[in-house]
Image (cartoon, rainbow, N blue to C red; front, side, top):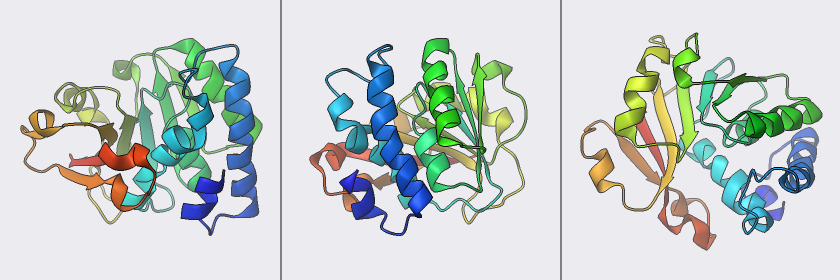
Length: 205
């Protein structure tokens, strides 16, 4: 939890309480369902919550922004972002029902009124969103055709609507086909070794 306070010192008391509660709920659920690698649950705040908030360092979502979290699993990056942006709506989608059960329970217990949950394939999602976010779900070459139809044309934010992904490792081959893509190294913002190779990938659509 100290990592959240370190990098985001202006959070409200309610937001701090919600982030604190994440540190209780995810380990409890992980005992029942392997939402996070059992070896990694001790690194929940850095490797999952803070990593999710890396998107905050790249773009500030305006009030009323609509975000689709594609392949959210147990709620990453959607739930940490929903805590950070209470005036932004987040629609969390995944094909794995048991992980979504975790995300829904946690969103409910935190009182996150800006989160909705959908169990199913991305092809079943309806509506328009300003951004599609994901955390290492799939190659951009596969992702773009699946989500392009869901990205709204009208802009609410300082950057054009599109895809924002959290990824790591060597991405040169994957990104070569997308001349408009922008990358942001998270090691610029976060000191922890985990972020040495972690990036935010942004592709306007």
